[in-house]
Amino acid sequence: MTVTEEAARFWDRHYGTRRPAPRANVRLTEVAATLGPGTALDLGCGAGGDTLWLARRGWRVTAADLSRVAIARLTGRARGLGLGHRVKAERHDLAETFPEGRFDLVSVPYLHTPFPLARARVLRRAAEALSPGGRLLVVDHGSVTPWSWSSGDRLPSPREVAGTLSLDPREWTVERADVLPRRAAGPGGQRAEVVDQLLLIRRTRWTSEEDFHAPPT
Figure (cartoon, rainbow, N blue to C red):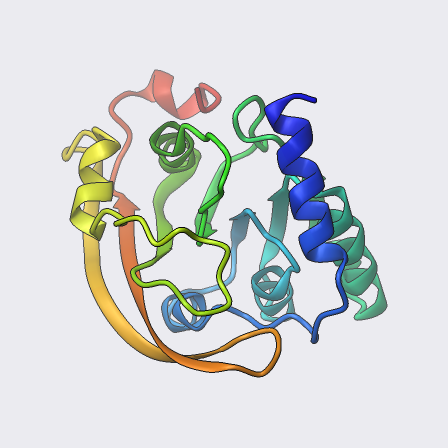
């Protein structure tokens, strides 16, 4: 079994368990509430709470995840809510493929995995998929909850994450790099104090006209 197949099975089992209706990430709602609707990419969409929240507010959303179970369930939920025309859910192994298009918002919520992933490369590609004026929102765990599968290894700060992307400051600007506490609820109703690490990057301009017409690398 390849690493991709093992990871896909892991996440299919994770999203195949009976869970409450998906909720939007509070950090996404805080940021997106200040923006007008446009095109959005939800990378690692999971159960689809963020995708559905955006679609309800007029965004056209491309949602991507490795799990076939997550993609199928999100597609069904979107159709059932009358949002199918605003949601396009696609299965991607981000180590190999990436959704096509340019986006006004790319949201990357908790892109953590127990399997190998060139995370900085994925995040840089997400930044390159932004339209002029578009924003990349990265929300990371800054602490480990009692119900998490994580080993508790130290996670880089938002500024450290930004540094790994090697983005040209003439083209991308870090608007926020915050460490934020909140009260979280687990899948079994557990409660815990957690820390979110929020990175918000805005694409301020294109380096050339050629870059504007080229697809993301």
